[in-house]
Image 1 (tube, rainbow, N blue to C red):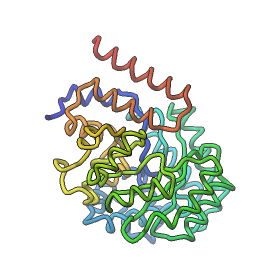
Image 2: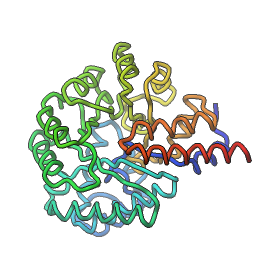
Image 3: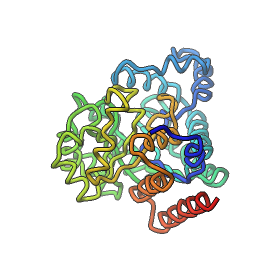
Image 4: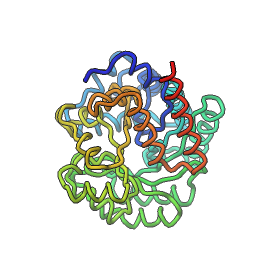
Length: 344
């Protein structure tokens, strides 16, 4: 089905939560271009209009290469603070009320940013976002898998010894091929012992066995992407039975060639199997999308009307690590918005 302009308008006003969205990967073309101009030794274009071509990926490996070139633009605490607050500003424009933002502190500390200054920068932006924009941010510190066990050790140390007040979870990102999940078990064990929740990426560019490893070795409570779960009926049944959510990012999966075409995206199979599915934007400017657009994509793939979209928004609230009071408040806001829309 095509998504009507009326449904687009509904989505734009719908209060939402987002659970799978990356810190640096959310930098808008305006911010990326400004940072590129500030750091003249980069190959990243300084003209926002040139970034669309720059952010056209041939495969997942090419995406990682481009992503890391943008990471390299974040060199000072001031860069970190600016980026973080501007990401929240873009979220506010979409009526995102709550987001668990995936942050990779190792990428910044290894480039010379003091760890304490990094934490202060993201926390300052978090407090300002809540006060000025009505956007509540929480952090998921993730290991960049391509950087190996040194990065895992540093990320675990930063999370458990220096972690800021807004930190709630611990993840694993980057390439999956050639980066087995079990080797990261000791670091996830430390993070979980410190009270952090486990949210690794798994099964995006590899098969269901990677998701099983994330569950069995890393204690995953949500799965980032999980695209290949549909290849294993037993896994789908397990995810459904135990209410382990999938953080699905449709446009991202197409952009990185993890899925060939939207018509082939497995999200409907996931939903039909009873899995708790949340919709997310991943690295939105890099993929030419945002969360509103991802909801429109989901409406098309799943055949959703306003009520269905409201339930999808409530899935993200349910799957979040918000406390019970926060969940109830956001659920009520979604219900009130839907009721007012239908009444009008």
